Image (cartoon, rainbow, N blue to C red):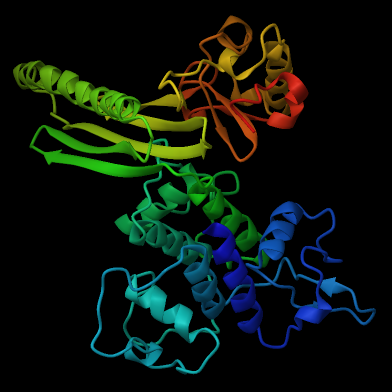
Length: 433
């Protein structure tokens, strides 16, 4: 399905970029992006057809203009294709037009269809002018990306830590949520203590943002499907919002039921534990004239990798039980789909293969790049264990640690990405093929 979408997208983007001849451009080969910080992302989105170059030099060399700005019309078209925005369950008496939503757009414009799909899915406000040629700010794209994920009902887990930016304190609640979403998922990051919400987005930044969105959505095609069971309750003392994964399509119904029962039990058991504690918490605070802050329980899951043999995903279990902040426990589920057994990190490798040395060396090298972000000595990283948390995504082994385990709370959940190619023949071929 993804391959078909990308082929359609390639044609659509080329047609949607007047003045840029496809014959002039070799995808991903731009004279002005060599050694650029976003070179890899630019090459990827160009090869996939998401973004084209902007022209050629006098010598006929393709240019991308990485520091150029992005118009609202361009953004509408890119978002439509990236998120496959469509009519959903909506039905119309007549086909909607761009002019039904905005007074300053041409229904024959190259971006008109993309704009209609964005309007239908509430990606942009739909009153007055659209200003298709106006440059897009970082806040606008953060908001649009956040709304796009919501419009498609895509469950994306994130560490429930509010990012600290000095220039976002006056944002609306929705924009605050959007900044939190794009920051905590890694789609967009600030610069030191500033998010720069009003700065124009550059083409290089857009390329990296698109790749971030693609990576969050991307799941290898397989016969099994992961759907969402949402359990949501609200009371004066406790808020619960559970996204529980549900697997379907396995040939063995027994294994399928076992996996689903495990996921459901983990979430509901945690809810029961918090509910059992809430009465004593309320009573103690009332007796001591302390403020009562409602408990929160939120779970979100992320599909990471699947083939016919292995499913890798994780669930973030966030709970707030009073105090300065909540805590997130990221629980990995790496499952052998033939047996239903959960796989420890050692189970990925051939017997007697020294995977630990390779992983430890790589983690130490990555820590050395920013040593101030981590604890030192006995409190810091001292090597992985056989029960080390991990998941697999996009051709890499992601090894991670709990909050406070090797770094301060502000560091979140430290992750270390190690390409599977680093292990050469050590990986079990019957799991990862």
